[in-house]
Amino acid sequence: MDSKSRLDLGARRILAATARLGPWVIFGPITGVMSGAAIRCFRRGRWGLGCFWLALNLFILLALPLTTTLLAARI
Image (cartoon, rainbow, N blue to C red; front, side):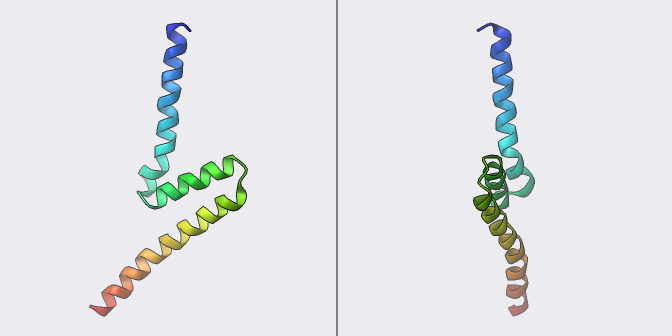
């Protein structure tokens, strides 16, 4: 393996790691992990599990502000 091939392999690993971290950075530590899991499931053809992750993600995105509102109304 020549030095150019090793550089290409190193760059590919960095890009792959960046792509895996992208959803986490954009959506945050909870929903980003679930979005990343859904993307991986869809790429692997596991549509049912991918839809589950999306539904769970949507539930959390809706539940957090609703819970905060309900708690604030009681104060």
